[in-house]
Amino acid sequence: MSTDEGVVEIVVCLGSSCFARGNSDNLAIINSHVQSHELNVSVRVTGRLCRDECMQGPNLSIGGEIHHGVTTARLRELLQLLGGPSRSGHGTA
Ligand code: FES
Image 1: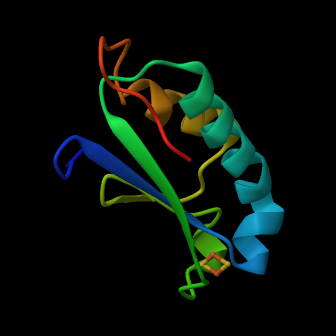
Image 2: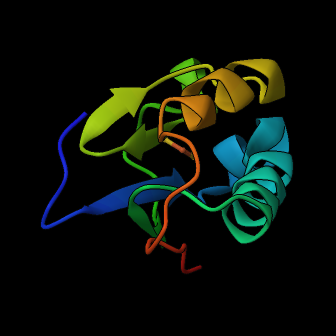
């Protein structure tokens, strides 16, 4: 997972297919996770439009790594990789 100066960017596909197939819930989970955990990295959450990968959706990327078919359970696993509590870090959404 790559970071840019301690910032991890999470990019969520907001195209209609991905959104309907789970990214609506995933976006809420990401925001909740970032707000309720003190992470050792800062998180920037952005959206993007459809990239014609709908059949593999819901799609999102974390730190530049693209993930397909991201269920809520899988998302929770991925978010755990962002690390634990930090003395100075905080998330943004
Ligand atoms: S809606 Fe996400 S790739 Fe098409």
